[in-house]
Structure formats: C-alpha cells, structure tokens
Length: 499
Image 1 (tube, rainbow, N blue to C red):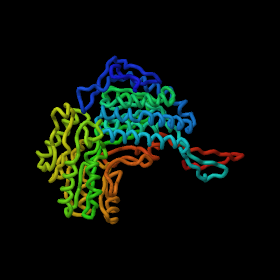
Image 2: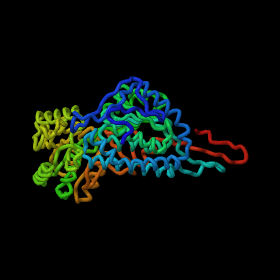
Image 3: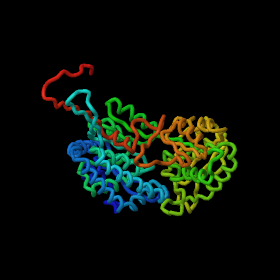
Image 4: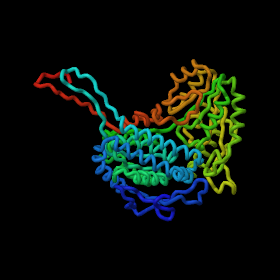
C-alpha cells in the first residue's frame, strides 16, 4: 500500500522527508471511469515549495555526482527490484487515475522497469574516449560530468513510463532531480517517490513536488540552480519553456505533439496492417503522442481496408479500464472528453464523413465516466483541423493516396513529425518512405507506437526540440562532455597558438 491512504493528503517529498506544501492547500484527483470516486488528495504546491526542492537537490547533487557511477547503478537495480514488487499496485494506480486499460497500464510499468534496468547498466558504461594528441607526450581523452540539478516535468498520459525514462538516465549520470508530475495524475508519482526512497537513493537526490504547473513551473525553469529541464507535453508550453530557458543558457529537452500517419500500400498484408492501425489509433484511448491519428491508404485496396477497419473497430469493447475485458477505457478527464467531442463536431462541420462512432457514451453502465466511441472519419479535407491538429483521443482520419509519393506527401503535410509507419511488401517503397518521411521514428510493417528503451525517442518539426530521450542520447543530455589534455613531457615546449 502507498504510504498514505485516500483520507490523508499525499505529501511532497523534499530532502528525504514527506512534507506538506507551505500553501496549506490540497486538491483532489478522481477516477475518470467513475468521477464520483476520489483517488486521493495532493499538495497544491507554490513557488516556495519548488524552491525548497531545488535547494535540497542542490545540496545533495555534489555528493551524488561524486559517487562512482557503478554504485549509483546498484541503487537503480535496487529500485528495479522494488518496482517489481509494487508493479501491480503501480498499474492499478495508473488505471484508476489516468483511465487507461489495465493491460496498457501493466505494459507501461514494464516499460519503466526496462528503462531502469538499461540505465542501471550504464553505470559501468558511461564511456568517454581516448584519442591521439597532435603533440608528443600528451594524453587526450573525454569523460562525462553531471549537470547538477535538473527539473523533470511530465504529462498525464504516461504517469510512470515517461517520468522514469527521464529520471533513470538523469540519476545514473549523477544529477539530483526535482520532479513535477502532471497535476491530474500525481498518485503514481508518489509511489515512484516511495520506491526510490526504499531503494536507498540519498535524501535530496530525488524530490517530488505536486500541483498546477502554472504555480510552480516558472520556478523549475528559471531558478539558476537548475541546469537542465526535461519536459514532455504540448508544443505550445514546450516552446515557451525552451525560449525561457535559453535566456539563462540551460539545456532543454522537449518532447511535444504528434499527428502520426500509417501508410497502407496496395501490396500490404492487411491481416497485419488493419490490427496494427486499430491498436495504434484506439489503444490507450488514443491518448499517446505516438498514436496513429491518420491512415493513408492506396486506392486499390481502400474498399477492403475500410471494411476490415470498421469490422475490427466495432468489435472493440468500451468500459472501465480496471476490467481486463475492455479494450478502450475512458478519456482521462472531462476536459479531454469535451475537447475530443469538439473535434468530432469540427470534423463534420468541415465536410469530413463520419464513417463510424463519434458519440459520447452515457448511461448507468458507464457511471458518468468520460467515454467516447472509437471514431473514424473519411473524405477528410487535407487542410482541415482534424487532419492537421493533434486530437489526443480515439479518432482516426482516413485518406486515399495515389502511389508512394502521394502517400508520403500526405504524411508530411502536417506541422508534426514524431512517428509514422508503412505497410508494404516492396522494399523499394519501404526505403523510399524511410528516406523521405519527415518523422523522427519510422516503422515498416508495424504500428506507429512507441519504441525500445535503448534507441532514441523523439521527433522532427513541431514534435520536439533538444536532444532525444532514451538510448545513448538520453545520457548525453543529462551530462556534460569534458575534454582533458595531460602534458606529461619532462620540460617546457611551445604549443599551438591557433586556438
């Protein structure tokens, strides 16, 4: 069980202590499947709380950074073990607060554990390199040094995996963390804090501050003790953080929106393509940045594709995510439900054809939850809002294309460039797509979803800025490269004056 129950407000975790906000205020989160059910009460933090967390991190960072990286790795392995013991509890916390199906929540916890395992191993692989010097009797090499204090600001849709894929590389590189989860999904964050506490992460190295981003976000970006910010969220907010942090020369890693397309060519294996697109569009209720928002289908198979798509979409079950029999769970909040319903209305107003779904689901069996049917639009104008903007819900727009060049043109016609995919048996077409798709991640005969922890994650255009997350890129972001020259010659000598 979590260290506090629903009747006791969950506290911030600062300097190794569970503390209340100086505001004295709390707020509640609710279960999107049953909005009358309160998940918990959390601290409504203010800038002074963020300042306290930054001070604790700044005090702990030097000793943590000096600890040998393999020893830091040993503590992350301990955290991995605790994650394993509390995995079911974490998955349930995700489902009752964010809403996603329990199978997806379980997969999210597993993803976080994979990231911890990979990052812990990097404690013995934080490589620099040696290189010959142009001077005699001189050693030249590079090594990595921690940044110090880093702010981690995360969204509500992956309340465990996204924080951990930032925290794990930050910690193994020797940084101290101030973590601000989304205000609507802080429950899992408190469990993560408990896990790191139990694992023996030293006081002040990991700090948790909950509450609205508007009240503490600027402090986490502006404070001169913060050396880097890792953010995942909207393009609008990420752009502001990037510009604000640039004024003080801080490092920024911002993963932003997506409008991902799956291309289906005439020679595609529809037994693979259609389930992949259904999973990509409607899994996790479409609330992930790599969700399949668009399907671009070559004309020769369009009719058969649509028949199969609608048949498989009809077979999906909608309901409370805690029931493993349900494929689609509620949207995360009433605000998100209202936004998705608004986009569905905009789609019909802009002339798109509603081919399936499009309605909110109400009635006693839904207990007032934030449900909407999986929705499919066809005949979508390419310049329409539902074709161009991130909806972040179970809404799929379908387009027809005349060949590979036209399909890639449609795929590239949006401001975002996170992920995309193509289904084809033709290697020539596959490589033309790989070489011309304007997305940071490309998939062949696979959904647009996700990625593996040891490979970079991130996008092009409005989908991200700064160094990528995960893989070696994540460790590069959370450390500085230092170049060392050692002159071990016996006497003095003249050196180059060019630099």
